[in-house]
Amino acid sequence: MSIDQKIVQILHKVNALAAMRENRFSDLPDVRVLAVTKNQSTMAIRTALAAGITAVAENRVQEAVQKYADIGEMAEWHFIGHLQTNKARLIVPFCHLIHSLDSKSLAIEIAKTAAKLNKRQDVLMQINVSGEDTKFGVPPNQAVEMAGFLSSLENIRLCGCMTIAPLCDDIEKTRPVFRELFHLFQEIKSLNFPNTSLEWVSMGMTNDYPVAIEEGANLIRIGTGIFGKRG
Ligand SMILES: *Cc1c(COP(=O)(O)O)cnc(C)c1O
Picture (tube, rainbow, N blue to C red):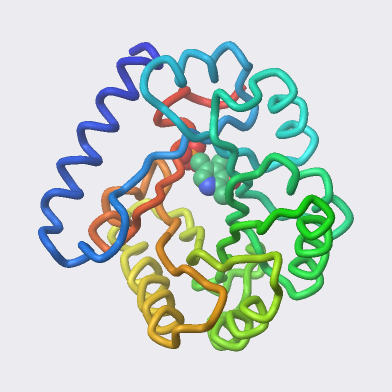
């Protein structure tokens, strides 16, 4: 199947799953599909943009910078990988949303760069719900405190939460992880911290997005499901 056909199919399935949720999540924006473009050529990205994708997500700084130089504002740029503090200044100038905010020191650095650019950087707090050592993210029991800290930084706006579920053969096993992230999102939202806008729940990838949508995701991150296996 071509990239265009895969996109049509995924968007169709996402809309059907979103419609089945009825009104449970109707106070949040509709589900959006991000194309995860790591290891993909700029030609493949252009094909995806022509087929109805509007936002792309990268997980490596150098690759994101290079692709932005080529594709520019034709796409909305999201950053989803672990971001080292000293690389924040490279990402902030063109990034619409950073999904992987996972420490106070990174938050301070993002805010500093954003201030110089007269910008307010939208971020999601990455939460390590599954608690795996191999994953980045704020521990669930520190998420509320972190949200309070982010709300004190003028040039950052906390817009939601992100998690990565463990890789499982049985996608049902991801459900408790997604449910817990949504629960934390709602808890933070209910606290009405100033200078925040809690709207986005980023969870679900090619293998597990149907469950993520059922549990409240409205930003899903699809790589291989659109582009095929990474080269
Ligand atoms: C690579 C990646 C994805 C996409 O994974 P697929 O299984 O290819 O859909 C989503 N989120 C993050 C953080 C990633 O690094």
